[in-house]
Length: 205
Ligand SMILES: Cc1cc2nc3c(=O)[nH]c(=O)nc-3n(C[C@H](O)[C@H](O)[C@H](O)COP(=O)(O)O)c2cc1C
Image (tube, rainbow, N blue to C red; front, side, top):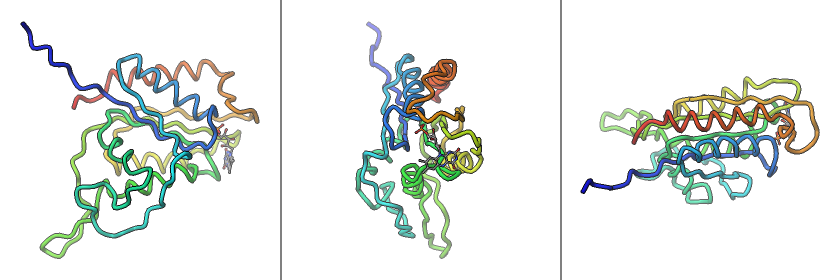
């Protein structure tokens, strides 16, 4: 009989920095997760606003085998982020950048390259050789269509944490109703397709 040992389930993890449930940010993120789930991925949608998150304290030293010294609500998710196959970072644009909820999470990932002292007296940002992961960015803003600062934050975050950018969805609109993207089924379908494609391209463990 053939060895039927099953392969480990692949995972997609979304950090959603919107405080509004069923907002456009939320709905687009759900579609991406659903697309990956159609390809057999396990998904987790983390609403950062629901968590009690300590801002980065710039400790200045490596937390050793952990990804942070502080074991608050975000802490277990940092480890899931290090171990997922696809990471989604979704944020509304607030004052030209990502939301405060998103930025709290971003800063707390500073120890994905921990500052480490060596016998020579040098200090360097160590490479943790984390698993390869694909990244998807979702940004939602108003009609001004100024996304460059928010985009730079999330792209820089992915580089720092060893995530390879797979795709991005930038949605600008002039509506004042919650979840305005519901009227843009084409974009929601695109989001689902990005989830599916990312799942098919996900790098093996
Ligand atoms: C505090 C705050 C600041 C905002 N700043 C900007 C901004 O700088 N640029 C912009 O295009 N939209 C800005 N907006 C509008 C939001 O980006 C817009 O409402 C977007 O749809 C929010 O995403 P959501 O619909 O997923 O909640 C701001 C909204 C809030 C609440």
